[in-house]
Image 1 (cartoon, rainbow, N blue to C red):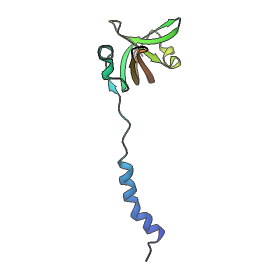
Image 2: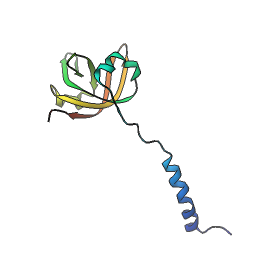
Image 3: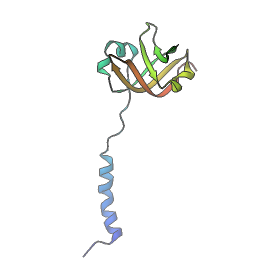
Image 4: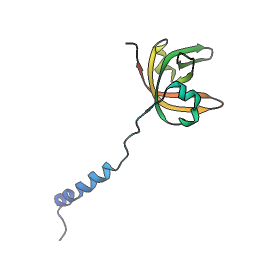
Length: 116
């Protein structure tokens, strides 16, 4: 005798819950100081990280980066996300990349000012 639709759904709910619990949670960003990103960039290439520094820029060609007191630098993209914090201490979370022809870059997802 076939299960009624409500009984079939009730029987399937625990299985559906179990399957949904098997999905991976999004990765948490790893806190990495600029010193590590400069000294060991390949170790962090492609990873979601959080780092801190002071926002600086150059006009020609226009680009932004963060730096620490020892002038260790990582470029920050996109410009529109980081530009409002020029001259300020920030914490940036995003995807880090390193390539010999492009240098150290952080594709920012979040920027939090630290000097408020």
